[in-house]
Amino acid sequence: MSGTEAAGPLSKDVLLVFLPGAEDTEWTGRIAKRHPGLEIIWFNAFKPGNEFTRPEEFDQEMWHRVTILATYLPPPAHLVPKVRYIQLISAGADKWPSHPKYQDERVLFCTANGAHAPQIAEWVIGTWLSHGHKFQRYASLMETGKWEQSFDVRVQDSPGLRMGILGYGAIGRQCARLGSAMGLEVYAYTRNERTTPESKKDDSYCVPGTGDQDGLLPAKWFHGPTKESVNDFLAQDLDLLVISLPLTPETQQIISEEQFEILSKKKTFVSNIGRGGHINQEALIKALETGQIRGAALDVTDPEPLPSDHPLWKAPNLLITPHISWKSLSFFSRLLAIIEANLENLATDKPLINVINRKLHY
Image 1 (cartoon, rainbow, N blue to C red):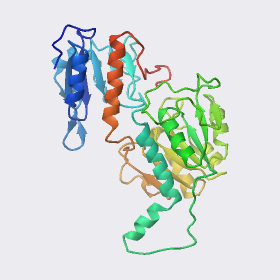
Image 2 (cartoon, one colour):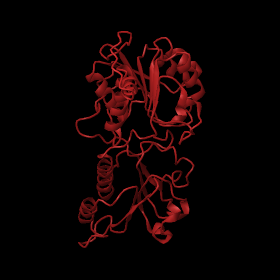
Image 3 (cartoon, rainbow, N blue to C red):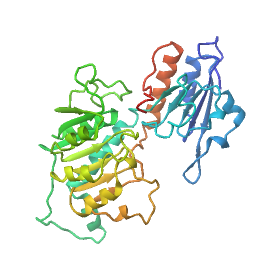
């Protein structure tokens, strides 16, 4: 579809929304009216059987005309010779670093950072509460109709405990907001130092009423790109460790045998909503089996899907979900809000939001 009014600044652009969902006609209508002449193509990339349409399966002549692209899967570079702005639907860019368009600094890349934060933070806190209050135990008792009020079952609530957030982006900040409301003390870790009020601010998209936009919630803030700096952070008597990092060469298996040994002092509960590659899974299994940590919750594994015979499935005190913590009925409306804001910025020569640092890949 395209606008019918006098041509606007984006009148020479073709926007392809290549997402797993039906067209939001209210949104496309509003965008067409706001940007006359912009051609908008919406392709539902979801196929029956819970599969994605590969970019190569879509009309190649159409691909060649695209200048603005919203996508999850990277298309082959030869399909998008004219693209100038790519909007990812993920918070990270780990599928893209080797892509020729990603390596072309003339092409703008933005993430959906912030669109996932509320629901993922709820997953983190939900799994933490499930572990502390033994919800899985009672769910299993329901299957046999057993009423158990054992005083031997120890329940741990949150006030006075400490949450460490490894990666204080939009997701980490919302985890901090929820955790603080429950009485958890928050320690934050970022790669770069954040000592000034300006440096502590969140410059990503933020759902109104969520997050920690001014960076005021952490009681302490740690930083550094080295293993030693990460270990120092992990040694802060953390009761709950939330891993909310992008996956980069620096963060690959950032939690392994040495780190679990450090966490064993407090028997930290580990929650990973980053990527499976952040944790050495053999070391995690050992940490769970030997009681180095009290438990863990994973929404990401390596590989994905996790094979049915993988030993991780049988590790004790572990909850695994199949990379679904991002799901929310509100997700796509938030993603479209980011695209809408960036189209406006593109049309008015203003800086886009959620622009990727292609040296750090987030």
